[in-house]
Image 1 (tube, helix red, strand yellow):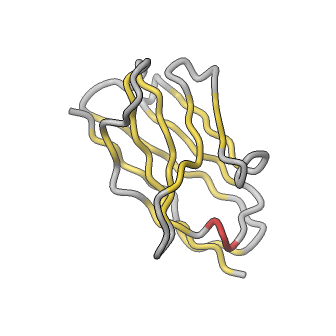
Image 2 (cartoon, rainbow, N blue to C red):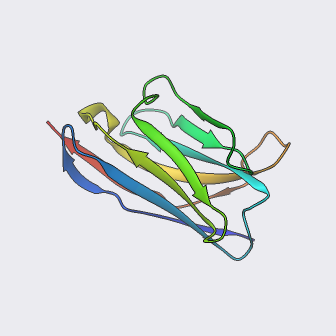
Length: 119
């Protein structure tokens, strides 16, 4: 069973940058795609983006494309979410999750880290 721990969240101002980390322990995630998700108060959880197990393929939600970048370091068993030009609407709790390569469902989730962007 893998344990995912997100970190790097906090309070920033509009236009600031922030990097979130998703550190895995218990097993390697090198054979897994990793997704980032977020959920704002009163809203449904939404996909931010994902990175393939190889790191070659990344996808992003329209709302973050061009501002957010997902990367991974399999040697460190960690995936990153680099966010620039943060906006108040990016305020949410951010979660990472793993999905076995070739399968449709995410099977392990972290507890999330809060990102708050003040205007």
